[in-house]
Length: 465
Ligand SMILES: Nc1ncnc2c1ncn2[C@@H]1O[C@H](COP(=O)(O)OP(=O)(O)OP(=O)(O)O)[C@@H](O)[C@H]1O
Ligand SMILES: [Mg+2]
Image 1 (cartoon, rainbow, N blue to C red):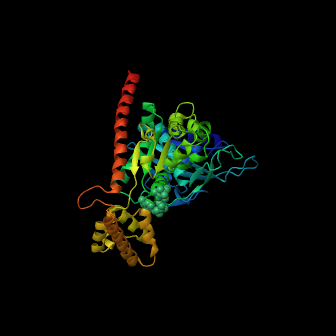
Image 2 (image 1 turned 90 degrees about the horizontal axis):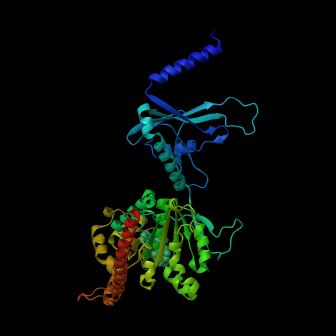
Image 3 (image 1 turned 45 degrees about the horizontal axis):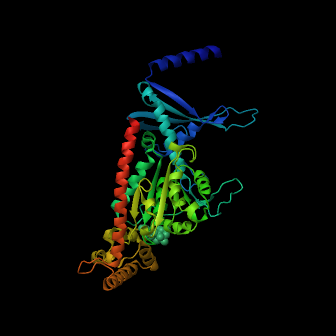
């Protein structure tokens, strides 16, 4: 009845009035912007799939290629509430049918999808840009965590692949997590907290002008979980692992190339660092410095990947013999945390019982548990040994536990008899002497570190002034 022009004008007018009185503003984020895919759309989708307490009763599920996890999403025309900095916003997923195209170079999907964000007008300035930044950041993180990890190795001894990369990669599927890692829970939590502070510390590193890196030294006998710890770190953070085989590196420039080709948010691992040293010492001049400088080198401006403060790297070194390490390697700034992985103690034993048998503390006979607590440290069994004992009798849990206890007892008695442990007299045994020496070596390093740190602080202050 009305001519279309009039109808349109009326609608426009009505809309304007409506918006004038509405206390909300709306932002449309369409999936396809012109012909390009809108990155923000994907980010919002990922973000909503994880961080919002999902209350909608219809969710869509997706699983990406190369991923082992499933993500939830908002179904068509559903909405969801989110809060950011105490501001509440509403997201709506809007899906409409697209008009059929007669011809297009690149056919568009039949449905037109988009998110509409509703924010109170008075909150707009407060949060909009920081909220969107936050969403992009979270989405990247989720993307990384959903993807399977990669393990890179330099076993080709310096030769490059067809694309000029010195690293070879395979999917990394180590199941170890901090939950399954058997070690003192307090120490474990310290490490988790340290990783968290580091991963979230970009601002700190930028502000202080320090390279965004952290070094961990894991030491202890074989089978105590050093490699498992590295896997747990990678799984926890969602980082890839670069397993750097130093014996395959022939020069500093080669090492530099390798380090330059590592990506940000990765863990660079150098296992058995004491063995690498023995080997490299043979060729004195070029390589004696190698083991020390790889850690420093990567972070010097101009030698890194070119995006210094934004590129985040964790170095992990492992050794069975901390006493054989070059003292300079233990010095300030090179290792931020020394982590002693040791024989199975009672808390670790309980974790292993839970891993393998699903045992909670109350499931195991009280007397057996007490007996285990009494003997486990004397037995000096590694978590690897205990794990082995636990899976030996897969079909008979009770028997497995009984046999493990017997095993612990006999080893413990043997150790006491051989005088390997602290005897009645309180004298230190051979083993403990080694441990004491390790501790002393580290303590003296720490002291040096402290004084070095003071020096750095002074320098920092001078710079500030
Ligand atoms: N702390 C632990 N928590 C859980 N499982 C462990 C632990 N330590 C060892 N294990 C078990 O033993 C196996 C071997 O351990 P892992 O390779 O981590 O030891 P390692 O300290 O790296 O030894 P090496 O010095 O020989 O490299 C692991 O795959 C795991 O099943
Ligand atoms: Mg190992």
